[in-house]
Image (cartoon, rainbow, N blue to C red; front, top):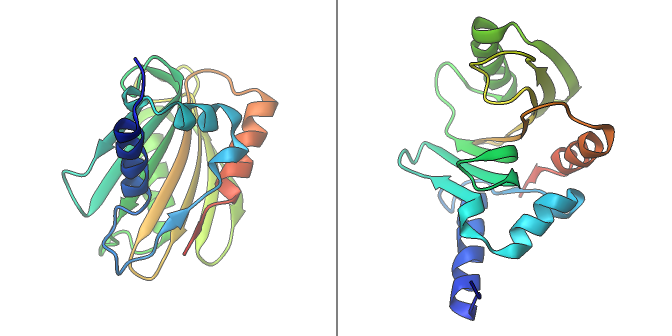
Length: 179
């Protein structure tokens, strides 16, 4: 299927919406997608089947971009982007990381390793081999907090993560910041 200018514009509008899903007065999350070659190729392809955008709840907007696989519904490696409004239970990046860890531990007893942490962000890896209820065997997540928003970027990998791909994901996640 060929892509005319209208389809390409719609695709990039969807990407922009995904990155700036919180109201205009809120922060914007940016990251360098070029740091992961296969993610860049998927985004450059303009294939809408590789992206699933869910904004049914404006306080919790989720995007999933399939990096490897047939589609955003059938993937083996993906990038998940979540923008959410803080609440009484989850006020900052550390609270959200703890919430995610508790949920994962209840299901799978994964190995959770904090990779980086500062006042406004946390990056951690969750490895849950042989866990049927886990979405991915390996998840590397960075959560960044702003004044009015929280953002999560997760590399989801079904299977074992090789070192080259791991380094690409870590580079992409470390590039994430708010504007």
